[in-house]
Length: 150
Image (cartoon, rainbow, N blue to C red; front, side, top):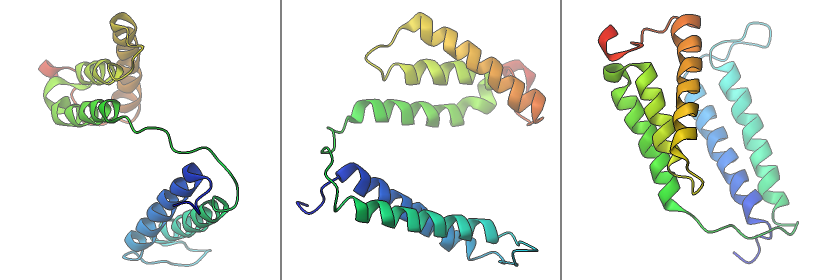
């Protein structure tokens, strides 16, 4: 790996390439259409090609320019945030959007070394109000607002 001079850009480019390939592969199952009459596969394929080109350029550029090494990988915050999101998805239909969102924000906030319970709770309440406004009232999604409103 000594030939990779800028590891952050190199691996970011590889992620772009992976998402680009995934978009192209998934979009290949849909009809392409034309530029004048775009089919459902047009946008995913074009976006996939753009991501692929951008990722390749970023990764190749990382072989030439000097950059900082990758920082140490911290597993605990990643697992806390991922676990919070998974828990939100599992309980949102049972606890309602408001309580689930407050729980998500509070639990994922514990991943930070600067965690303050009062601020996390206030942030959770504000995000829950925003989520309710956007998803329940704005988009009319069929999610319960509260556990008793099923």
